[in-house]
Amino acid sequence: MAEFNWCHNPGCHKIATHSRIRGTGNNKVLRTRKIALNSEYRRTTIWAYFCNQNCLFQFLNKFAREVANLNPTLKPKEMPIKVERWKEDTERMKYIGNGQYQRSPHQVTRTEIKLQNSTE
Ligand SMILES: [Zn+2]
Image (cartoon, rainbow, N blue to C red; front, side):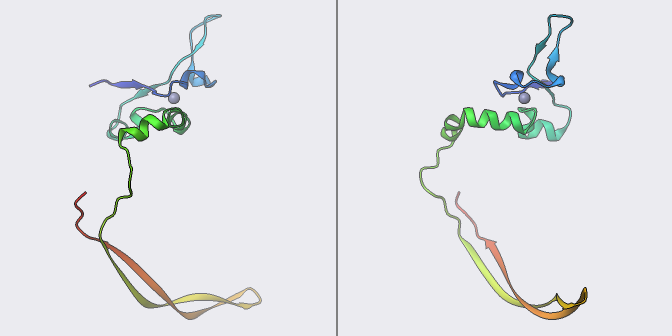
């Protein structure tokens, strides 16, 4: 397993930050950032491939069409659900003047969406 990846944003090396400077004397360059795969989180998330959100979104903006074509969505998908609604007695703070508040009864409507088995 590789211990690091290079940031996949093709423009990573064009972003002028101290962390990208490599070389000595008059032979300095801006280099694509190296991403250490030193944690489970790094190895299993999008951050294994991009050094930060700026690079991730530059990549997505440049390759949006190609990314979308990896998993085309030509029609909306649906998932069966059950919606339960109920009233619940609660309290809220009511301003009564002079910087004072008072608890007062209040009724709210709660909604719970229960997912059903989906075929997809
Ligand atoms: Zn980057």
